[in-house]
Image 1: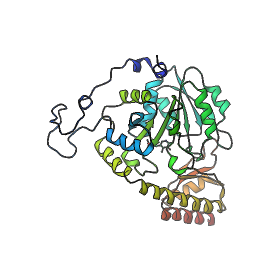
Image 2: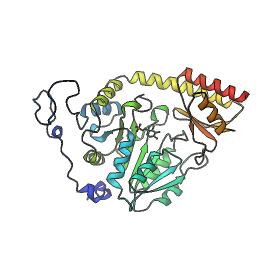
Image 3: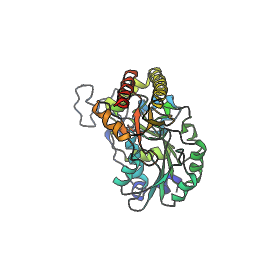
Image 4: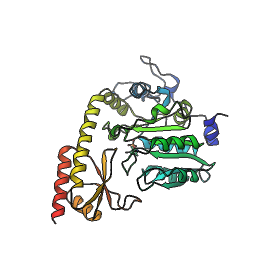
Length: 346
Ligand SMILES: *Cc1c(COP(=O)(O)O)cnc(C)c1O
């Protein structure tokens, strides 16, 4: 049995997937009488390509990854959920993650009735490698790492992530939702070295397309084949595929916005650090600033009343008294600073 077959749930290993009409024939310019669609062209009368081939080829060129190593889904969240459903036997298997991190991993674990084990980050927000590995056992099917990490905003140490990839039998999922905002290189180039690596990326952050819901998982062909077998047949709709291709054709526009957001991140960091009520602004490799306030609850309430919504992370371990502030447009950031100056004068 292959490495991936051994890791899979029995029910998935033996699955005969649904075969859609468009799986069996996928050419163009044919007379399509196979899927009971309305034949009159509305722009949307046909089912989308279930394998999103054109979009994957375009993405593959951009990311230097073969299209057969890419899974596309309804946000990264679909990829996360499918990994649970493919690899984790409810009530039997477990997954390991860091704490604090993105909330979806635990929600998916709970939904799938899979034990979720968390390893507290060190005070400088790095992985406690030995502590994390102690949580791993033969039923650990997935390890979630997020770099740059949400909500702590920092890159995880590359050597630590490699050590975990080398020492864990199960899949190691590295969530790179914020990869465009950091100088650290993506783990995509490591896919050839680690058969247990899954890299998650998304169009929701730097690419500015949170509304179309397109997330990607990149991994070995065998892992991607499994994910494709269990997804909904037409999981990425025609509108999303088209909009994604249009946006991906303009990487310069994305890059210009990222540059502006990085400049604004620095401006905001300096201005926030100078505020009376701010204890510290944590270093950020992402498009948000974790900011520790003397009175986080008071600031949060005040900002909300002013119509400025930030994320209260003050009850999260290692993030005590912190608000997570997304970098907005220059004008939005100035409004935030003005409001905070006014709060200090109260
Ligand atoms: C925002 C975010 C995502 C994006 O999820 P989508 O479902 O693709 O919108 C994924 N991971 C992390 C850590 C995030 O912060």
